[in-house]
Every structure is written in C-alpha cells, then in structure tokens.
Image (cartoon, rainbow, N blue to C red; front, top):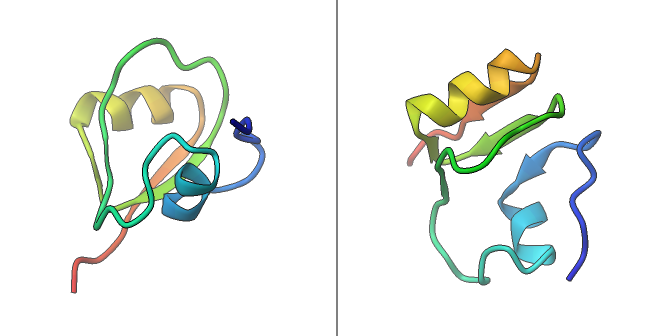
Length: 68
C-alpha cells in the first residue's frame, strides 16, 4: 500500500490508488477517527462535522463535491 502525501489534495482517486478505499465505490464520506496532526486539503462527497472540524483545526480545508 502507498502512503498519502499530505501536501497534495486528498480525493477519491488518492484513496483508491493507495488502497484505502476499494475502486468502484460511488462517493466517499470521511469520518473522524484517530488524530489528525497535519494540514490537509480534502475533496470528497461528504464528511462528518467532527472530521471537518479536525481538518480545519489544523489549518486544512474540506471541499464537498456536488452530487449530480
């Protein structure tokens, strides 16, 4: 398995290529589990409020993909 580079945007493609999420999943929701210590930029279908707060607490950003 590959590691995620926190300096690059984390999105569905990133999670699929690292093996964190299996390919073919339609939409990914980020949940807060564990501790985040790095500033990251995440672009996914959805995230829990606590996950967004953890991202923003470290100076990162969460962008919600539009569901068409």
